[in-house]
Length: 205
Image (cartoon, rainbow, N blue to C red; front, side, top):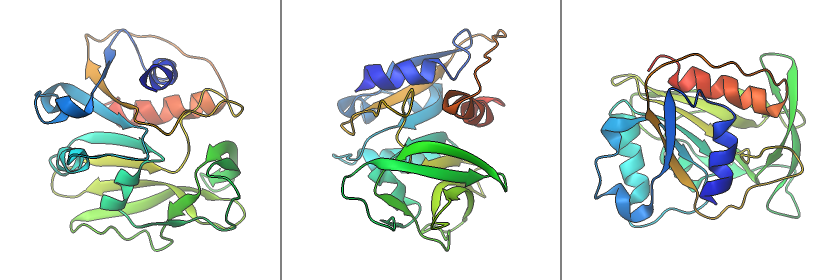
C-alpha cells in the first residue's frame, strides 16, 4: 500500500526539501515524472504493462532508484531463492554490512547471485549487505558507468519495525524535489539505516 510506504519514507527524508507522490501504473507512460524525480522507490513484487522497462530506462539514463523486494531487480541482476528456503514468503534474517555491523530485518525468499554480475553491460554491482548465515547478497548497489545511474536493490521488506511488514501488492512512489532546508533525525534503528541510505541516494541531488 502506498500509504504505508509513504509513512516509512517520510521518516527517512528531509520533507522540507522533498515531497512524495504516488506514481500509478497508468501514469508511468503518460506523465513526465522522470525529470522531477530525485529518487524512485519501488516496493512491489509485480509490475506489468511495461512499467518495469520504463523504470529500467530511468536508471540507464542516470536516474536513482531503490527497490524493496521487487521482481524489477531481475532486469539488472539475477535473483535466486535464498537458502535455507523459508516455509513462508517473508521471514526474519540478520544482515551483515560494513564488515561486521549487523541488522535484523524482514526479508523475502530471494537473494542475489553471489557473483554480483549484472545482466546489463556497463553496469557494476557491489554487495552492500549479506545474510549472516549463508553470506548470500541481500542488498546490492548497481551503478551505470556511462550515465552514473544508481540503484540500490534490496530483498528486504520496507517496514517501520520488524513486527510490521508491508503488503507486497503494488506500492510505487516517487520522491520529488522541493526547496532545501535542514531537518534533523535522531533514531538509531532500522529507520536510521534506511534514512542513511535515502540520504546517500538523494543527498547530492
